[in-house]
Length: 314
Image (cartoon, one colour):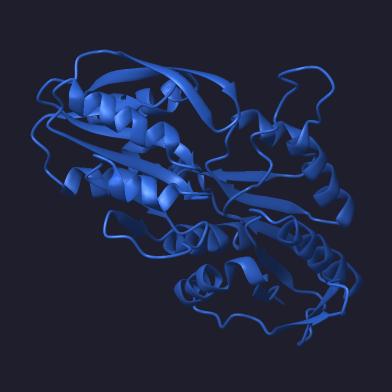
């Protein structure tokens, strides 16, 4: 007797979860959420999940309620006798806290990993972690997917004559270099200096951008300060156009205003985090087909290694 697959969603990712379920061929499971007057909440599965393989879709972007809701869903599933509980976390929050970069700070990513494991999760499925080593924070299997499987075909479809990949900072150079190697393009890097988080004090361009169609590659776009500043510097240096590819569109503060007022031609993002509003400069590519395919492969004990190789995605 085969194990039944059930897909449920927390409040943060309902739209994406519905698309994932549709691509997989299932209906999204029914859940309810009771909220007390003080803000405390309690999720509840409104259908039997006993003995099922449960995929819980929830991105853990701010506020922390999204993480807490996921933890409660995992605990409820465990107590309802689900056979396997897989947390599908398209955007893994707190991932920027992957190490102690100064004294007396928390390693938030490790704490979140501990919480998910303690709640009873059996497997994690996520996309474009801010730091690859976060996979090692877990003692359960982690399926780490890459947004390149969506972004590279889209970039190639643009048919840009002088395509050049770029990193908005030194930390993202490895990611941009992987794109550049696959597309067989040049690579340029911006070197930035910060005095505090989300505030760029100085930025220096390393490489030639004259008459080039630049693609800035990053995993997260938060305030958009770095990307818009980098785009301005590159256009001033003679670039023909500047676009950005960012998996997770956090877009906090004045990010939308900065993007719309910037020299960026287009910002290409995924739907791991729902947009707060639409923008003519923002293009959204859906991760649903990829997550649905991997859910099917995990359920059937099939290899998912093809999703880790750039040369298999076209």
